[in-house]
Image (cartoon, rainbow over all chains, first blue to last red):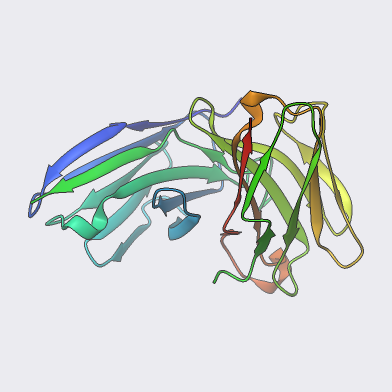
Amino acid sequence: ELKVEQNPLFLSMQEGKNYTIYCNYSTTSDRLYWYRQDPGKSLESLFVLLSNGAVKQEGRLMASLDTKARLSTLHITAAVHDLSATYFCAVGGAGGTSYGKLTFGQGTILTVHP
Amino acid sequence: DSGVTQTPKHLITATGQRVTLRCSPRSGDLSVYWYQQSLDQGLQFLIHYYNGEERAKGNILERFSAQQFPDLHSELNLSSLELGDSALYFCATHPPPQTGGIGYTFGSGTRLTVV
C-alpha cells in the first residue's frame, strides 16, 4: 500500500526566511502533486511533477522530484504572510496508468510570522 | 471558480439521517473522484467513477454509496449518519488522458456536520 509522509507537519516561519517541506513516498509512482489549502477551502494546485529531476518554480515556491529517492521537496524562499496555509503533497498514477486515485500526505501547516 | 461544482456547500443533519452530495465535473471531464477530509483521517480517497462506471474504491464505508449519471454528474449518498462522518467532502476531476491535459481539479467541497 502506498504511503506518503510529509515533514514537518507544523512549520512556524519568520517572514523573509527560507525553509523546505519534504514529501517521501513508499512505492514507485507516476506523478507527484503539490496543493495548497486555506482553512475551510478547496485544494489549489501548485505543481505537477512528472519525471525524475523535475523542478518547477512559481513565485517564492519551488518544487523538485527525485524518483530514485522517492522524495519531493517544496522550498519556500523569503516567506511572506500570504504563504500561510496547509500544503499537501500527493502521489498518483500508480498501476501503470497516468491517472488514478491520489494518495495524500498528512499536510504541513505553515504559519508565517512578521 | 475551478469549474467543478459541488452542492450544497454546507449541510447540517442529525445522526441516523441520509444525505446526498452532488458534483458536476467540467465539460469534457469524464472522471469523478470523491475524497473525505477529516481532522483525524486527513484526505482519504473514497471512490472513482469514469464515464458512468465505478473504477476504484478506497476507504468507503458500506453506509456510503455513489453513482455517476449519463450527464456525468455524480452523487455521493451517505446514510445512517454518525457524528464521525462530519467532514469536508471533495470531488475532483481531470481531463481525459488522451487530451494531454494533466492535473486534478477539485471542487469547493461540501462541509457536512452531523449533530
